[in-house]
Length: 143
Length: 128
Image (cartoon, rainbow over all chains, first blue to last red):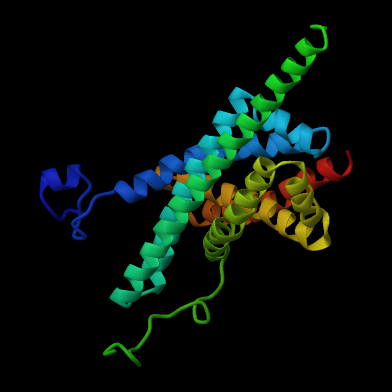
């Protein structure tokens, strides 16, 4: 402690010339992971069974679908930050480090993007089945 | 590379093992395990649900098999262990819990909590 200018200390900048941004975002996403992870574990444990219909009903409700999407964003973000530190700790060659970070970013953003697409598709699938059932019901005399 | 055969700082084989060291290593191991394996399972799980009943049946068959159970129980343990040591990190971040005795005590507590939470979770699932 005691190094750098006052404004530099305020901004959290040290000799690395970058701030505490990585450290802070790791904590912010950790807080989100804590609550969303417990929500997911609780939801899965209290589920009556693991049939396709049960899971889809649970996962495609507006509340759970949004939390599931947030869980995806938060965990992939947190994992990207965590694996970055592993790369920085163990990959010392500049070219290899660049390649590892590029691959990590592609995997993290690709995985999160794909997961969000799957959640959206699940919700649309459930909505489609609902409207198809409603159409069938009205075609059979509106009962 | 010019860095070949340079002296290395003492590492895992040299330091005397203590609870805090074990928890620190487990934090990274469980975090990396969940990032590499857990997120893969998450993608597969969501993809199978989005793919329809047949795709989910295929996922279910893997999840029900012995190796699937090993992965899922392992991920549950990794989640609770990483969660406990992560909460410990939050406490350390505010500057508390650095006294030798309390630091060692909370270090011992985190993996024990993770084991207990994993047993309770899977008992609740399997005894349904």
